[in-house]
Structure formats: structure tokens, C-alpha cells
Length: 345
Ligand SMILES: [Zn+2]
Ligand SMILES: [Zn+2]
Image (cartoon, rainbow, N blue to C red; front, side, top):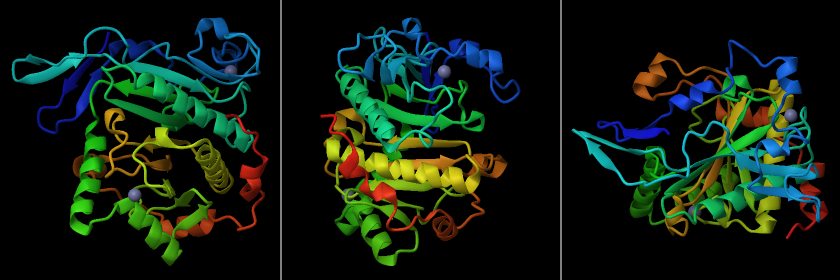
């Protein structure tokens, strides 16, 4: 069982999880062909981890091979849904048991395909898995926040080749989420409007950093991007959490996400990347002052001493240049996705 300990100065929580060290190594020891052969996520090995949720052929039994997307428990969880989530003191320090959840969303049944080589419909199924698991996890009163993210490539933190994303439900609100919430609240007090709604308005007007847009989302390179080719997807509808999106919005998000990941893969030769969904804490997902968004971070550079000390990032690619390189023609076939996707209810 892991433990959460709070940095007494910065108020950031750390998960101390020695059990996670047993999982696959990366960087110095890349998975081999034989590791691939033993892939735990491939069809036929469903019995290894019984599914929590799956998008599967109607009528097919749970944990049988006929699935498109599958959510399962992480074999080496950083947090587990066991025990009491109350805080306790250790002398001057704050800590709590590692209560929460850690899940995997296997994004495709195909070992060598990914969100780019799959169709946009597949991305929509993955987003549906995120939403379904979020709705389930938020029912647990011990859970304060649900982090949804993806690591693509070894340099971005993936340890298994078969494409997957992760969900970590925590009994605390992460400091970064608090900071984002505070920033949005302060902007609202200052300007009496939502900062992300303002960003959409000004970026669409200036048209210097917008890469793609549809009826529901805008994909752009942010004005003060920390990383080369950092991208945001901002929903046009003001709502506090990814979990609040409608079926139509999910399809529109799948369209834009697929397009941006495809452009990154084409321009930058399939770079390692992370993406995260930045939503309000789950007990505040109707917060009228919070506007959720998604961030895609290609991992083209390493975080070095200056960034670690100062949290000031040096970005060698202007967001305007990133837009110029990644922009797609207005009449892309993907523009028609929403009318061709099957209604999955
Ligand atoms: Zn596999
Ligand atoms: Zn807004």
C-alpha cells in the first residue's frame, strides 16, 4: 500500500509507492519483441485483468475478445480503493494512506495501432471510456479528483507498447488543479468574465495561433506555450469538467484530437507526447467559475535544471510557428466526421 505525503512548504502531495518499482523498466531497457509477445493488453488475455468498462460488440460477454476499448485496473497501482482516506499528522507533517484508484484504458485491440493510425471513431470510444470511468469513480466519497492522461512513447513515460491511457483518482485535490482554479477565479474577479472564454474569443479574432476548430472546440497553440508544439483544445461551451460533455461534443472532441495528433505525427515523426484533461475537482464539477480544457505536450526536450529551479520554461519554437507548421486545410475530410460517426448513445 502506498502513502501520500505532503510537502510542508509547497503544499504539493507526493505518492510514495515502492510497489510501482516492480513494473516494466523504460529508457535503458526498451521492451523487446518477446515482451510484445506477452502483451497483457492484447485480445485473448482478458482474464489477466477483469474489465471495469468496455466498448464491445453488442451481446459479447464481458472479458471476451470482441472489444474496441477496455478499462481495467492497473496491475501496479499508485493508489488503491481500500481503506480510510483521512489525513493524519506525523510530527509536523501531513500524510494519508494511498487510497484512490489507478486504472488503464486500453485504446485499441490492435497491438501496433494507435490513436493516429486508428480512425477518429476509435478516439470517440476512448473518450467515452474516460467519461464512464469518471462517472463511476466520482461516486466514491473518498475521491476528490480524477486525473485522466496519456503517455505515448517511452520518453513520455509509457512502459508498455500497446497504446493505453491512465486514470488516477486521488483523495486530495492536486496543487496544480488548485492553482488553475485560483487563476480562473482571480481573472473572473478582475475582469468579470471567464479567462478561457476570453482566450477563445481573442484567438479566433487574431487567428495567429488557432490550428483547427469545429462547432464545439478550438485547437490552438497557447500564447505562452511552455513546450515546443504544446497544444490546447478548449471547449466553446463553458463547463467545469470534461465529464459534462454531451455525446455530440465527445464526437467533436474526437475529431479535433485525432486531427491534432495526426498533424504532430506527420510533422514531427511520431513524437513522444503526453495529454491531460484539465478539469475541476470531481466534487466541484458544476463550479460556474471553472472552464475545463485539454493539453497536449510533445516531449521533444527534457526538463533541465533551470526549469526545475525556477519553473520558467525556455521554449525554442514560437506558438505562431507551431501553428504555421501544424495548420490543416479548412476543407479537411475530418470536418465531416460528426455526420459519419455512428450514434453510440
Ligand atoms: Zn498488445
Ligand atoms: Zn469559460
